[in-house]
Figure 1 (spheres, rainbow, N blue to C red):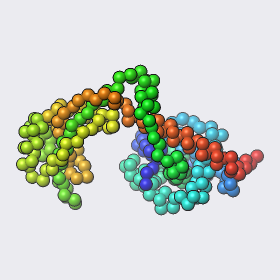
Figure 2 (cartoon, rainbow, N blue to C red):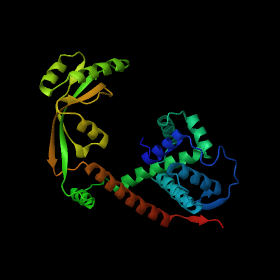
Figure 3 (tube, helix red, strand yellow):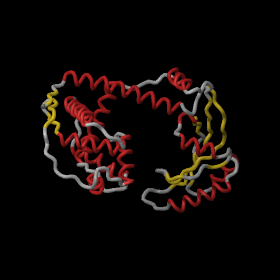
Figure 4 (cartoon, helix red, strand yellow):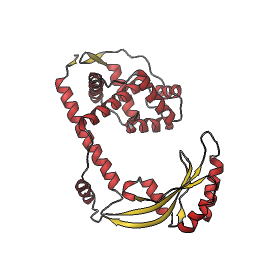
Length: 306
């Protein structure tokens, strides 16, 4: 189950810093109903909680009016999910909440305590998680697969002033120091991989040497473009000379390193292509989300209490 990345990352970062926003703890508040959304109430306490949550995420103040509008949108998102039988069970929401706690290095109890120190009820956070998740699923089901044309990518790159599209193609041989399941030999295997890295010099002779090692697998050569990989991986490959090994890392199969056997420039590609595609896809998703929300608002019964 995929949790909205922006929300999780921001919460984890904020809690890691342990910065109380509005004093530690919070008192009980009188709950005044502000609006009914298809029969579901939103109270003044809900608005206060959303203001505190958004301050924790974005480090900026949100007006009560804007917080109320966000809450109305969330109520509509959850209600629509229930209509199409895509509602989340409480155990699913609790699992998402536990995942956020784990990413921040805390138990669920510690996460709840951390939120409380920022004046937040854990349920307000869980409601936000659920609304974002079910809505992203709904929008994707309505929008289908977003196709970003190469012409759109080129136009976006040219707006950045990049007129010549050049990327790097890497020829790689994956090398895996196998670690059996339930074994705890990663440390020893990392030492072996680093020892190999120190003396590996050239793919031809180096690969033959590796084939003589015990429980080490050499896979077939693969070609990867810098335009199709994250910047951190590209940086590692750029810093690794041809004929040498990348720093070993722990993987599911064991300890993995890559022999960089060749690098060459490829025209018609760009190292920023992946980033541009992600940005254009996000823009398409946001536009579709707004359109669907506007449709729901038009058909909803939203009653403001004076």
